[in-house]
Length: 217
Ligand code: G6P
Ligand code: MG
Image 1: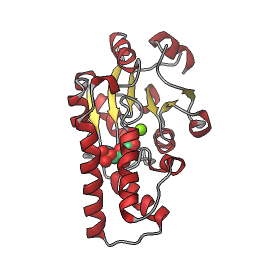
Image 2: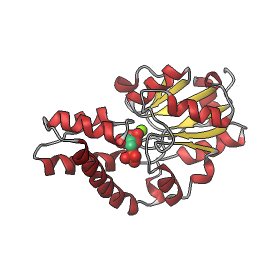
Image 3: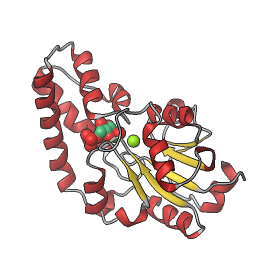
Image 4: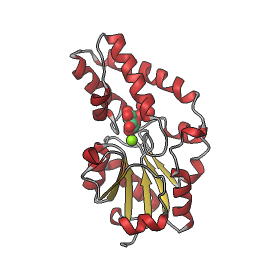
């Protein structure tokens, strides 16, 4: 085991099951604009900022809009997304991740959040897990979205650890790329055919323990 001083978790699709709500809200927007948005294209939207996501969605639909209209639609998508979030319960914290984070903390590892979302604080507070994170680096604090490493570098800086001593947990290809560019080790959470550039890929946190993790990274 190499020295691990901090673990930095992405939010959507790693800690909470919100990725499906982002998808549903984008799908609804696409429908309003007159085209279908399919799950296979949704992978491209994971991990990246709201406006970057909208630009990809518009490109898929072949729709051109001015900036004011883009701002309006991004706000509308967020309004729909938050309607889902408002109905969320702690059951939508992904299985076993909370216990795993608590175990890491007990073993002296610092815990940070690294998410492009501007709703991160709200979601963590609503689900009663904000106290698990020593720092929250989110979309309100950075200029460059993943795959740029800024968000993870900020989290590591706030935790006062070097990237080489930190491990990033991510469900998005753009997030794994950001971790690699920043000099972090990474764990992909999900499909190995998408997250193959990570050091390790796990399907989810079920059965994961701190000692198992130290043995695999
Ligand atoms: C995460 C999600 C993306 C989402 C982005 C911005 O990275 O994976 O799907 O677009 O956050 O989220 P926000 O809540 O600010 O719209
Ligand atoms: Mg994610």
